[in-house]
Amino acid sequence: MKAMFVLSPPESKKLIAEAVLCLTEVREALKSGLLIIGAGSTNAEIAQKCRKEDFDAGRFLAGMIVRSTLCVTPREQRLPNLVLVSGKKMELQPKEALDLEVTPKVLIKGANAIDPEGNCGVLMAAPDGGTVGRLLGPFMSAGWPVITPVGLEKLIPSVPQAVRQLGRWVLDRSLGARVGMMPLLNSKVITEIDALRILAGVSATLVASGGICGSEGAVSLVIEGEQANVNKALAAVEKVKGAESPRPPLQDCQTCELMCDYAGRGIEDLPLNLKT
Image 1 (cartoon, rainbow, N blue to C red):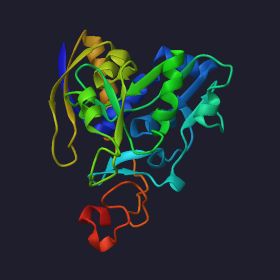
Image 2 (image 1 turned 180 degrees about the vertical axis):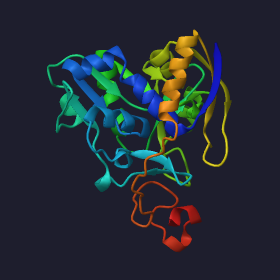
Image 3 (image 1 turned 30 degrees about the vertical axis):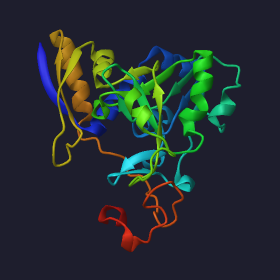
């Protein structure tokens, strides 16, 4: 049996989050180990399900692309990365938590880019590389699992090529934050295609991208499998239909200290989308 449907980016994020929570590594970390969930829009869906309480997803963002600009959530309004030990929230910095004598240790870190080879890339505006800059080394050295939920709206031709083009001190100007990119070459990537396989046992093919009137960034997928599995997949898709993007607090360009062409400029000098 075959079926086709469209997922908007917020719908994709919810579907991917459901699949990530079904992964054996994640379930074991929630049961008896350490699970670190880095800030991000897809990760906000995962964190909300893990916390099972009121959770302001808009504040669980750090770097983001918003208002057609590379930007960040104001630090004073940002929720910290979520650190869970045996499923319980710990008031620890992620790097401090690595010293805890618990196993397994799992990091969930979203991405800003994925290429056809399955390589992912994370944009970095912080001088120390932010969450991925501080944690990827210890996780890679130890061989602990890194899970990367990422929607196919973020498909680019080549992550290695993008990495070579970026850098805070390489870019001479940027209409938005200047950034570098950290490649994630061996993380466990979960896209919509992987999510549908995990949740319903169907194969999926990306057949079109994009849209208008709120469907910008949407992905059109065809799934194939046994009738019961296809119907299960469609039920999972219908469950996330109507999802909306989180509403983050926005950075004030006039007081921002990022390396950005807009930083420090008066409101009269800003493009219209940055004045609202």
